[in-house]
Length: 297
Image 1 (cartoon, one colour):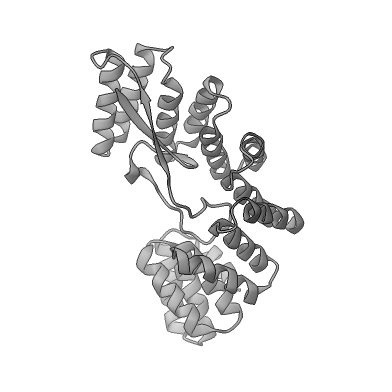
Image 2 (image 1 turned 90 degrees about the vertical axis):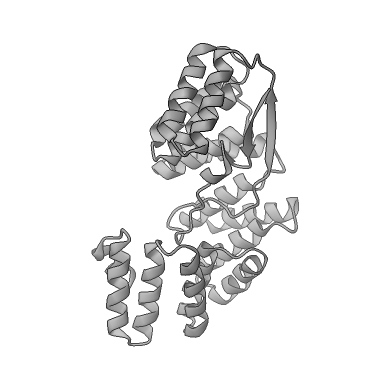
């Protein structure tokens, strides 16, 4: 008997594989939410090659030896191509590949898993997220809309569709989707978060601060703090912005966009030496200097 965990919108083999994206949203980012794990039990002969390969894969995952884990998953598939657990196995294999940045391979395996279980909400959400990471928003939208059809109570798909609508300035559709989340779950932080980002995009910074603050109070994270800091900067509330940036950096010190935000703060305070320091830090952490300078305009 073996159980592999499938969690929320991101299938996970082990919990440490979760990588929360905390950059200031330039694209759709994974929503901040509690992960709910549902173990799936697969009856099998524990002496079979299939089981031995899965057990070996789990050992490699525990040791963060991703390539070896992937090899054992592949050997398990070869050992029993018709096993009823192969959809979940392919999902976990795809998650390993996505974790390593091999998005095309991940999408291929999520798709193969969906061929076996075409109505799997989790697989559709996983593949949609991978499509987003590759910039294929049309395919992502198709998967998210399919989830909405399959599960009228799913809020993650509506949040992601709403954020995509914000990006394309389809504000009416975004508002409708976030309001749907409120009707499904009046206490959902995703509704306030989405509406906060919608108001920010529309330039309604005071309302955006109010909504983002609701979510931050319940569950602070670097991405939301960064977005609220950006709103504070537009309102010249520099001390509040500084506090949010400091808190966000304590959580994700390698995020280059946070140094861009702090450089904006430095600029507003006419601290040119500090601004140049933070520009250099943003570059050191992965941004092109030309992009940093453009963001400071």
